[in-house]
Image (tube, rainbow, N blue to C red; front, top):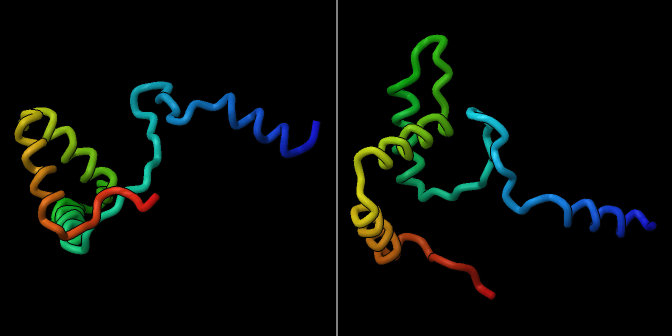
Length: 96
């Protein structure tokens, strides 16, 4: 079997989105931010950072998601996503 065929076979066996194996496992994803949103996240990181606590962007974003899970309804989040889409600040979707 050629190297290319073996690589394709190995790739076909892997799920597109790996399942976390245990609590605390992390899956890395790329996320895009506008400069203003990134500035806000960086500000939170700076405000929350204390000697020895290791606050970073990922931790702040995970905390924001957990906060939204506890305090926001699907309708509230949908309205925010609609506002984001309608703002014209970013282009949604991809050119085919």
